[in-house]
Image 1 (spheres, rainbow, N blue to C red):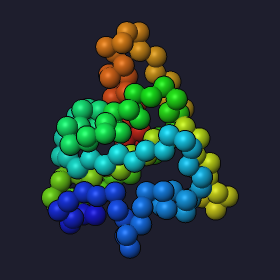
Image 2: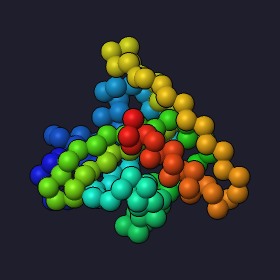
Image 3: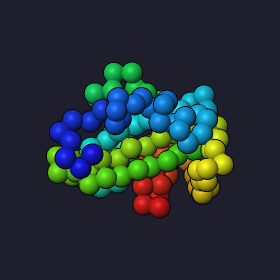
Length: 131
């Protein structure tokens, strides 16, 4: 990933996101993969996930702002092209296999106004990015 010049959800050997998830467990009904290549701070990376003009389906925005999403996983790799590449998986019911234990970290964010929702989502994912 460090020397790639484009970002794609297609993995090594042509694997798809559902295939990669299935290697480690069972996805929930809201399982969404979000890719961002950026040299910005984590706050801007999360804002890019929410306001991604190249995402014509708004899949990442929909997943990030969905109140039913209760799980997030974040991966990171240095990149000569993008600075950093972040892979974020959002879900509501992923269950792991016994061979792949996951550590649960609970972050509670309670926005007090609708305009605070984007800030709350940013803060939550920023915390996840640096765990």
